[in-house]
Amino acid sequence: MRISKTLWQGVLLASVTCGSAAALAQDAVEAQAPTSETAESEALQAEANKAPARPFIERSLVIAPEQVGKFKLYSMNDYPGQPGAGIQVRYQHEDFPDVRVDLFVYPAGRVERAEALDSAMRDLRQSLEYAVEKGSYSNLEFGRDGEFDLRRVDSDGSLRAPEEKAAPDPDKPDLDAVLAAVSNKEDYRVGRLLEARLSMGDEAMESHGYLFYRGLYLVKGRISATALTLPGESFVRFTQLAMATLVPAVTTRSTGSCFKKEILVDPDAEDASENLAKQLVVSLARDKQEQCAEIMDETIPAGHRAMPLIYPAGSWGSKG
Image 1 (spheres, rainbow, N blue to C red):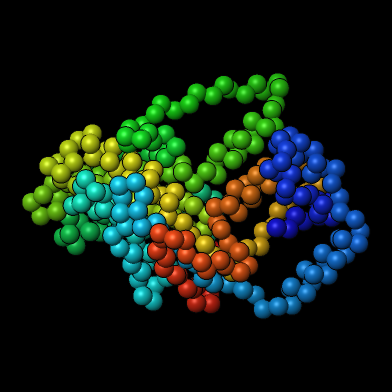
Image 2 (image 1 turned 120 degrees about the vertical axis):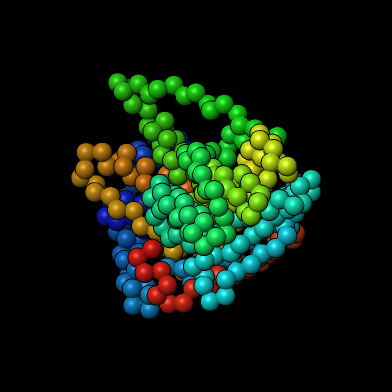
C-alpha cells in the first residue's frame, strides 16, 4: 500500500492492529520515513513503473466448503468464456433437500459498497422482471427491499434485536468511535434483501434474494420455496440462516494489480490526521476482504472445492 506525500510514508500498518484508532492517528501525523528509505522507495516505484501493467485481476479462485453445518455442497458451476458471470455455488440442507440454496459469486471491482449494492439490486429486480417477460415466472410481486445484517442472525435463523448505541457527543469527539463507525460501514456482512412472490407454472412460491459486497466480488443469494415446503416464518428463518452460514464460508482469492493500494492525503489539510486514520481503517478492511496478492496462494484447504476465474486482458476496464 502506498501513502502519497513524503510526510506519510513512515506510517506502519502494524500500528492499526496494535493500538487504538486515536493513537493510530497521532502516530500517522508524527511518523516520517528517513530520507534514505524514501529514496529507496521512490527508486523501487520507478522500476515498477517500467514493467508492463498487470490487469486489475488476472485470476481468482472461488473456494467453497463441502459442508457447513447441515448445508452440503451440491455443485459448483462456471460460465465458460464468461468470467464476468462468476461462479454459481449450490447447497442443499439435510432437512430440506428439495430447496435450492444458490450463491452467485461474480466480479464488481473496487467500488464503494453502497454503489455496488444499489447497482446489483437494480440488476436483480430487472432479472426477475425479464424472467416474467420470457414466461419463466408469473404473478411477480416485490416485497421488502432493505438492508440486511448477517450479524443479527441467531442460531435458529431468527433475528436478534439491533444493538443500541449511544449517540456521540458533538462537544467531545471520540476518534475511536468515529473509526469504529467507518469500519462498520465497510463490513461485508451488511447487505441487502429483496423479497418477492411469484409463480412457476401452477405453484406459488416465496423467493428471497440477498446481496453482499465482499472485496472485489458481489455475492448474490437466491432461495425459493413453496408454502408446502417451507411455510411462512419457517421460510424466512431458513433463508436467513442459510445466508448467515454460507456467505462468510464461500471465499475468493485473487491476483493482479489489485494487490497494490494507495492512500491520497493532503498533509496541509486541517483534519489530515483524522482523514488518514479513516482511510487506513477503510484500506485495511478492504485488503482483508479482497484477499488479492501479488502471487496468489493456489492451495485448496481440505474439505473444500474451488473453481478459477481467469480474466483476459482488458476485461476490467474502469472497474479497478
